[in-house]
Image 1 (tube, rainbow, N blue to C red):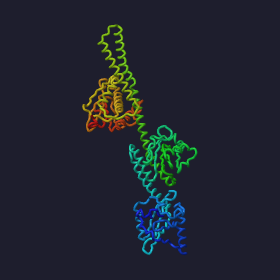
Image 2 (cartoon, rainbow, N blue to C red; image 1 turned 90 degrees about the vertical axis):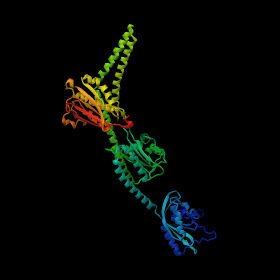
Image 3 (tube, rainbow, N blue to C red; image 1 turned 135 degrees about the vertical axis):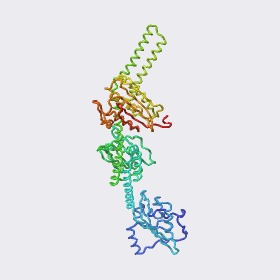
Image 4 (spheres, helix red, strand yellow; image 1 turned 60 degrees about the horizontal axis):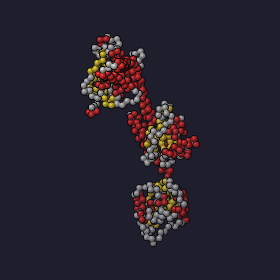
Length: 571
């Protein structure tokens, strides 16, 4: 079917102006022509226009498809059904063809009286007068709206199938840290491919019931959704259905059941006119949902379209499930490390009591002495000042012990920063020194000057040092007193800073050397076998290496190295 712009008025420059005096002769129908016209009207959309493009005849099919009555069409030009769909050059080219007396064939997209689009395969035949000028035009059309819709659907389905193949290959290859960006890009591609407006990803978070918005992509013209949108209160009906593993699909909000009244109000508030929501499962349990929505208009979701989007949800669900599993493993690792750190420090309880008792007892003794001096009236200011200095020193010492204990028991996430391994070794040595002295173990330090800094979580590195020193002390239980020595060395080279701890204990049997860092491997009757495994996890998470070796002169040494910072970072 043609559009109004096919026969624009003369002032638009698309039609030669016919002299007003010229008489336009319209077709005179003979009996045979009337029969032919009847057949044509039964089969096709037919219209006749004068040379200026004004409609002089419109058959029933034209009226039916355009939504206008014959009275509304006669005398109008084709702008009455203009859809503004064709490019600017389309109608000038069409007009040049028929003005020269040549028929024109093509497809045109029109708009009916209610604003809906329809497509017509159109033929325009000019009938000329004796001067070769058009007397009138006969337009014959065939409704191909459904055919074009099917073509669009097939092309859309092909694009979606190609996208599914690409997403399946790409998302699986993304490391966990890049998954979030990849999911949003996948949502973007799906929305654009299917002509949608928004895609949202919802997930269960912790023990909290319901679903929280974690990822979404939508067209820029729509207002953003609230961050961390919690759906349980606003969409109770939808959350319950998704939690049961059922998908939600509606073409119109009015299609929702009465029990979804609160959900319908939320949909109206945040835009979706049509929605498809698919649950995401892992190990048979629902952990989230992937939703697609249209905000500008309604849409009837086709069965094959729903099936394809379920595949999309399965692909994204697998990736999100993998990410959640990796995050859970990391969380469990951190919790295990904290538990091991607490266990190691639990072994220090008696030593800590001893370490605290000494400065506290000294503080009490000094304070009582100062009181006696004051009460006796023989107090010397210099003597009192010295006593107070001793009290301050002992209080600082007790405070340092408590500070180290609190830091290492802290369950909060730790930040990595530039730090000195020499300084960490000194702090840990001071922390464990009293315990080592109680076991008659001599602790020696040989720290390399100008040791470069490392990027590390200091409390985690200190945990490794404490664990290794405790193991070294336990390895020397049966060592003679004169050999009970632990030496801590630091050195650097090849872009790394290294700590080495040497003991004079029983050494490590050759069959244990390859297994000593494995989880749950222990030779202690009450040990969990996690201490050294966690040490390795911490060091490797920092990009370093840890190893154990026997010393030729007896005993063993453990060493770990971390990447050294260079340039301004090292300073």
